[in-house]
Amino acid sequence: MRRVAVLLILLAAASSARASEGVYLTLDGGYALWNGKSTMKSRLATQVGDGAGACGTTGAGNATLLVDCQLKDSGLFGLHLGYNIGGHVGIEGGIAVVPWSLFANDRGGVGLMGLAVRWFPLQGLVKPTRMFDFSLLGGMDYFLMGANGTIPAGQSDPLPNSGRGLDGMAFEFGATFELYPARWISLGLTPRLYALHALRYFTDYNNRDKGGQIPLDGNIGGNLLSLALSVTFHFEPLPE
Picture 1 (cartoon, helix red, strand yellow):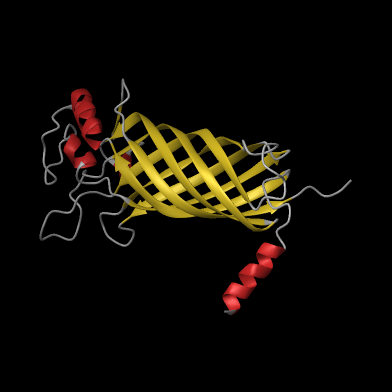
Picture 2 (tube, helix red, strand yellow):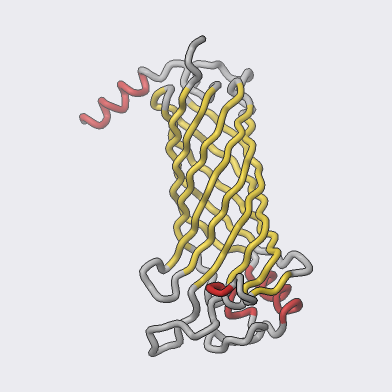
């Protein structure tokens, strides 16, 4: 009952609670899924060699070693800092990470960093005393993906020269649905798509700057689909 009472008090205090002018800081937490892996493997195999290899072989042309053996669905964590202009448009910089097997020898992950623009279509159309909001987002990121390697059955350490990776650009698209318990805080749900455009393939991720890389001539495809819960803190400009 106490929790319900606190929630009702916060809702009662949320008059004019919706996106408005000012700085905002968002913390994200959710889950990300790899999509288009079969396309990635076939296109990567076309460029670098045989895609029919197995997890226990380490040839540079073994596209299976990256796509089937090292890319894993996992949790997503993000941080975004932006500025909302008049409640209509937000411009934000953000970082996101998708780590997996953090405490294992075959750990890996994806990091993304870039800029995005949000549009709040309800501004001016729905009464300003609403306690909810909705925004569409689009942006561009640099991404870096890498794994520590593949561990054969019965062993504890990764095979030498088996850590694969990619880096390049990613285009992100998504939407956020928000509820405002108070004017200074909102709780959101964000489905997001990161469409990857890899520029380099790392045959040895841990030595990627020492010759362990192959430039890619064309997009190999692949994307990350994520669903995240968020909390956003809103800081309105100080009065003049």
